[in-house]
Structures are given as structure tokens and as C-alpha cells.
Image (cartoon, rainbow, N blue to C red; front, side, top):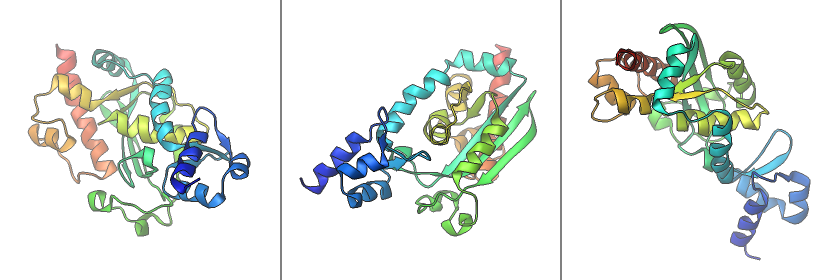
Length: 251
């Protein structure tokens, strides 16, 4: 069997639906092939020693997560946030653009909002334990985060901060369903938080030429101190959200 076919067989074995135990996988396939796939992010290992196919995991999580953290319609997002005493606005930076290909979180920033005002802040850098490809975008290098905690303690701390509150981001499919949800899942946490997206809300309630964070900020004169840093983006996303909520609730 050639190496390409071997890799395909391993990735099929590592389906998210039926985890492959490390010892079972090693009994069937050479460890060098398993290691190569893991190194390139095509398969990954949970804290319990179960391998899974990361591409299938990303596809599965979108369905799995929306069962517990449903993708709301825009009107339901407005209703949720209008009635919630508190919610959390989050932004992350990552090693690259695809959790399915093994990219990891390098920064998490979140604001706890009560009646439109920030009452608490969560901000952590994360050592991703792999090369950061997106340093040219957010400026975070491996040297910068090499002494930071890895994702497991950080994600547990973030869950403690988030609790059961609604979560909001400017691209909920990326920040929440792809990256944060995947790390929750890997660390034995089942998130059930309702989720809202300022991109989807902006499409309905704002008049911006594009719905990128920086374009909306420029259109509506909202401060954005340093785009593609998680704390600045989270602050800006919250300002955009407050503008949206004023417009939505006034209708």
C-alpha cells in the first residue's frame, strides 16, 4: 500500500464518529505515518488518547454544536441580547485560518457586558505548540507566546468566565463554532451557550459597504485601536453590537 492510500485509510479510521484509540491505531498502521498526519494537523489526539480526523471533526462539530449552541435567526439574536442581563463578546487570533487543518488559538479576549457596559474582561495569550503562520496579520510570534500557557488551562479558565451566558462575536462561525467549540470539545466541555453574530446582525441593521469589522468601524466612526488584536477587536465588536441593538430595538 502506498503512503497516500495509507494516509487515507488512517484518516477514515480516525472518524470523529468513532474515535480510534492510539494503541488500536498503532496496531494497524505504522507510527511514522500516524505521526506525519498528526504533525500536519490532519488527525489529532484528545486528552484521553483518542485520535480523530480534524477535517471530519470540524464538519461534525458544526452539526453537533448547533444542537447544543443553536445558530439563531437574526430576530432571535436581537431578542436574546435584549433580554439577557449579561452576555460575552469574544474575539480570537489563531495560527492560521482553518481549525480543520490543525490551526490553533493564540489569543482570546472577551468582554462581559451588562446593560451595554463592560463589567469584566478576559484576555489571555496561548502557546499553540506549533508554528504560527499568521504573524504577519496579528503580530503574535512563537517567541512572544512560548512561555504562555497551552490551550487546556486557558480554555477551562475561559469557560469559567463565560459560564452559561450568551456568546457574541464578529463571525461566530469562525470564533465560536470552529475554534473555541473545538477546544471545549477536546477538553471535555460541552458548551450550551446561545450564540449571536454581529456580522449577521450588521447585514440587517447597518448600512456598510462591507461587513468586515474594520469597514463597519470606519463607516460609523467607531474606534478600532489595532485591527487583528483580540482585545481591540472585541472592544470594537461590542461597540458595533451596541449600535446594532439601538437600531434593532428602535424599530
